[in-house]
Image (cartoon, rainbow, N blue to C red; front, side):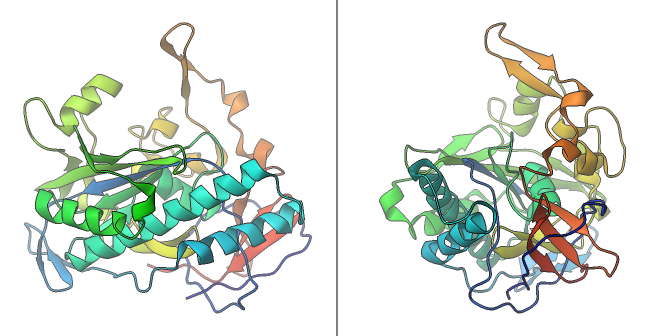
Amino acid sequence: MRRSHISGNVSSSSQPTIVAFERVPAPQSNSRLLGMIALTAVIVFFTSDVEHTIKVVENDRKEPIQKMQAVPSVAEIESTLLREHMIIHGDFIVEETKNRLTSLAHAYALTYKLIQELQNQHISVTLTFGSHLGALRHHGVIPFDEKDIDLAVFSTDAVKIKRAMQTALDTQPHLKLTINEADFGYQIFKTKTFLTYIDVWMFKNIESKELTCVGHQLPDKSCERWYKNFHARLPPVYPYDAWFPVRTELFGTERVPIPATNIPIESRDFEYNADGDRPNFWNTTCGPHRRWNETESRWIEVDMSERKCSDKYSVYPFVFKMENGIEQLRQGSVVIHEVAGVTS
């Protein structure tokens, strides 16, 4: 499905409110602004037993896997990105920007195909972490600070996971990308032409009502080890209802699954919201609470004055919820597209 689109000037009085939505038909000339940055795709896996198109968890709950249909080609995605760019910046485009949009198109295409192949293996998948946030707030990858695409997939079956990943990679063999093991799961590293790396996080349903990252569950290779090394704490534990039943949201040019709630990005466990458990904090505060200082080789706190989303409205696309329930993606006063409604 495609979404409707208009362009033009609007009042800046509307406040951004991010919601899920249904896409509605739009003509071929419609376009979307998605940002022009290098990416990392992060995919999170949860254990599940599956019969055909349903996932069976330990408490016998059954959730339908909302399968992704046709995956657009890289050329189709890139064409959309270019048209979106022109809505804001006109016909002129520098070579560096063109290369970034091309890489972004490859990253989206690979992400969609990976979602599709995981679903073909009867594995549920959603966006998570920064990509969950990006879909809600920008209808795509976060166009500043963030350099990744985050997915959540519900299995620790290494054979199925790697089969799905390899099948996705085989659709773009010229990129010469490979699958690599990591504490939390798998990675696909970026290259000079593919400005992304893909992180595949493996989650397990440890109880009927709780989900947490486990990785490979080995003494020297686990999600617990990764969290202790990078965050000096254990992986967060989420209630089952925070993730299921999944919703769908626009991410790039296509709708993909996202968690049932925004709890994963509203919790203090989320890197962007370490200040406390506050609903919609992620929608008004942009950027992480800390940054790495190369000179001092340590993390430093970022002042809240540097993290106001409103300071970025004129230079990056944000989603705004209108009074009639329509969502608009706009940069400054220019509407890039609008979509109807909120769906589960």
